[in-house]
Amino acid sequence: MRTSRIWASLDSFVEGGDILGRKVAGEGFLRALLEADPFDAYHFFPESGAQAEFLRAWTRDNFPGPASRGACVFFPRHSLPTVLTEHDYHCFHLSDFLTHTVNLERARNRFARRIFPITGATHSLSYARYMPALLGRLWPGTSPRDAILATSRSAVAVLEAAFADLRRAYTLTPEAFPAPAIRLAPLSVPVPSRADPEAARELRAGLGVGGAPLILSLARFSPHSKMDLLPALAALKRAQALGLPAEALFLAAGWAETDDALPEALEAYAAGLGVRMRALLRPDAETCRLLYSAADIFLSPSDNIQETFGLTVAEAASYGLPAVVSDFDGYRDIVEHEKTGLLIPTLGCAGSAETNVLAGVWFDNQYHLKLAQQCVVDVPALAAALARLGADAALRRRLGDAARQRAEAEYSPSRCIERHLALWEELNALPLSPDEEARLRRAEHPLTMDFAGIFAGHFSRTLSPEVAAGLTLRRTPAGEAVYRGTPPVLYAGMGAMLDTKRLRRLLLATRGPVPATDLLTADDPLEAEREAFHLLWALKRDYLEIV
Image (cartoon, rainbow, N blue to C red; front, side, top):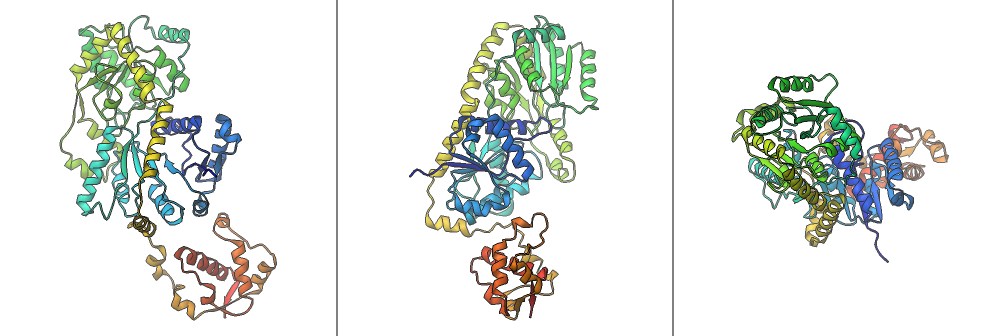
């Protein structure tokens, strides 16, 4: 009989709210996975019932095939220990490699039938608060089958450097504190359907472009967390003297708060330079599709270390746009210089001693801004690139055609899923000796809070074996009523913690005085905790009493 292949996640991947790269990437991955449908089942463990209902409706509306055959299954998260013992999972994949990974590894090691791979994708890596989280990834319970899926070569380098710094600082050996593998897995962009050419022409006419080059940038308006557009405007001014038509329009589209003065200030600054610029706020998906279809050049002078991949650069390539981008982070993976676009040299700081200290007390956007303001995107080179592409339509077509071909080959949803499937197969095939598996099963995370031990001083006494040996228990009249069928009164959420069948067995066993040690017989620490929980809860609710 063939074993079912089950993919699972703690994350929903589909989020509402503001449009951010992480959200777009997460939903894009899940769409690609369910479109390919390579597994027999997809198990989700959402954080709440409302999230489960939302995702159930989303899968039903968007992917009726898997949904109709019952392949998409939704479990309450508290059932994870039980479900892990009942199913043999091919892998668990998380939308973010930091959020739940260690806790999932702990649950897998303790409950799962098999040590399956646990993987998670990177997004921004530049937040100071991530270093403690990365330290937590170095622990004895990390399996050789676990991997961080980095979206770019730069992201791989960042993680390797961060883990190396942590090992040096805490003198952690790889043998005692292994790190997860780091594998390259770029994000995907959907295969675009070209916007109506007439609509694209109308957009250009409305902008007053005509036959002049339309240069598009699509990003948040934020020098703190995305990119500084002032050097781009300076480069556009220089480019005019190098042959860029004065009628060329720079269209900066992206997210900004409604009261943000930056977009209007950029337009005014550009006008002062004699550069044609328009700011377009909060374009929806259909408008973005129209912008990509109408533009001639894609411009993205990224200078902020929160960037790791460059989703809009890959999207622009899929629409056949030649790109002028900074030689920075994941951009250099997406754009091949002189083949699909032009990379502009960057210069960064070699030391950050003051910023390293202040990052612990500043807001994220403060140290991101300081670091970004030291990242130099070569303005003369940027001007030369824009002038060159702006004056040469044939070059734009050649680079754009190559960009589209590369995007289809490397960043299509189908290619993304192929990569992930190959990685999961490779990770599953890694051997684990019985000794290695036993080590994983008994591993304790060094950052785990032992609540019972650490807070033992709060109580007059605790239910230790010595205390239990001196206790005799029996059920009360209220306990007898529950045993006879009166439902116990439970707070919201208690249904996930209390096993009513176990409670009835406990009340049956205490119909007469019983030593507490006869009720606490489990050797397994987790089962012992469940026994103690039900006993203490029954005492708390006056269903049991101490004789």
